[in-house]
Length: 523
Image 1 (tube, rainbow, N blue to C red):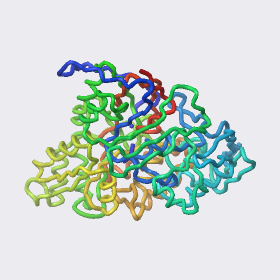
Image 2 (cartoon, one colour):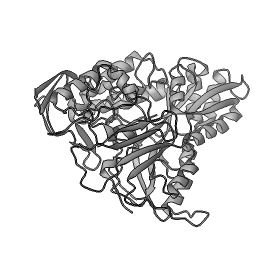
Image 3 (tube, one colour):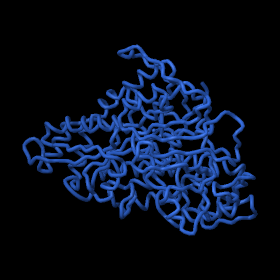
Image 4 (cartoon, rainbow, N blue to C red):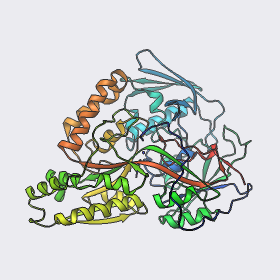
C-alpha cells in the first residue's frame, strides 16, 4: 500500500545525464479527439469501494470520483477551497463553520448540501475503520442551513487540514441505496467529482474505467478527457512500451533505468519531485523469530541504507526517523547506517549468527515494484554470510495485505504516506496498538506509546513544540526501544507521461493521484 518529501514545494522537470542504449523513438501521439486518459499502475487499483472505509490504492481513482471540503495546496502549504468555498474557526479552535459551494450534485442526482455533508462524515465516523480517526476530535456536526455546516470539537485541531485528508474525508451520498454497503461492493460510486464509474473488471488488466460526469459543478467548457482508464501492468518494461505506443498516457513510477530513458525520449515528458512517501520494513513483533528484539535490531543494522539509495540513482533519498522532512514529526539527525558487526553480535546473543543456529526470515513485498525487489535482494545478500536466509515473496497488494493481517510473515514491506499533510498518520495508524491488525503490521502493542500518541493531535494546535517532543519520543520508542521497523528511504516521485498531456502537476499530499480534470489533452 501506501505512501514521499524533502521539500514539499519543489517542482522540477527531470533531466537525466545518462544516455539510453538505443536511439529514442517518439511515441505515437493520440489525436485530440481521443480523450481517454490511460493511467498504468503496477498493482490492483481498488481494494475497497466504500469511500468511508477506503484506505489503499484506490486513492488514484477516488480523488477523481469523490471530493473533500478542502484541498491541500503544495505551493502555499495551506488548504484551498474544494466543496467548501470558505471556512472560519472560533477563537478557541473548537468550532468550525464551512460554507459550501452552490449547485453541486452527487452522481446519483441528489444535491450536495450541508445535511449531506453531515450524514456522510457521521457515517464515516460511525464505521470507525481506515482513516476515520481524522474526525476523532468532532463531537457534533450541525447543518445550519443548506449551505453551512458547523463542527463542534472536543479539543482544537486544524479542521480545514483534516477536511483535506486523502482518505476518510470524502463527501458522498449516503442515500444512494438502502443497503449502501452492497451498493459500493458492486462497484458503484456516490461521489460528486468530475468522473463517475463506467466499468469495473476485478482482476482484469483494464480494471477500472471512469467517465465524465455531465453535471459536474466545474463545467466541461475547456478541452478535457472524457474518460479515464486504469490499467494494471506489473511489468514496468511492458508499461513503458504501452506509453511509447501511445496506448498509455501516464506511468506513476519508473526505475532509474527507464526514467533516464524517458527523460531523453521525444514526445515523453518527465516529472520529478520529493514526496511524503516512505518505504517501511515492518517487523513481526509477536510471532516467529522476530519476536526476539535482538533479531529485529540485527536486521535493522544489516540493511544497506547507503547502498540502496545509491543503487536507486536518485529515485529515493535517505530518511531520518519515521516522518519525512517537511512535516511536523520529522526528526533530523537520525539517518540509519549499516552496522554488520553489530548485527552479527546481536544474532550471536540470540543463538543465531555465523556459528549459531540457522535462521530463516519470510519477507513479503509488492509485486511489480522494482525498488522493493531490490531491497529484498539486497537484504538477502547481506544476511546470507550471517547464517540468515531471507525468503522473499512478491505478491499482489491485496494478497500481501491479507497475509499480513494473519501475521503471516516476518518482514512486511510497504509504502506509507500521510492521510493529510501532517506526521501523525505514521504513528496513529502503523504503530498504535490494534487488533485485528489493519496497517499496524508490526503488531506493536505498547500502552505507554499509545498514551503518548493520544496527546499529539491537540498539541499540534496548542503547543507545536510539545507536539514535536512527543514525536521525537515516539520515534525513539518505535525504532530504538522496540525496534519494530526499519525505514530505508523516502521516495522521490518520478513520472513519465505523453507530451500531449498538458497541465499536469504533482501534489505530494495525494500520492500517485492525477487530478485528470485539471489536465488537458492535445495532439
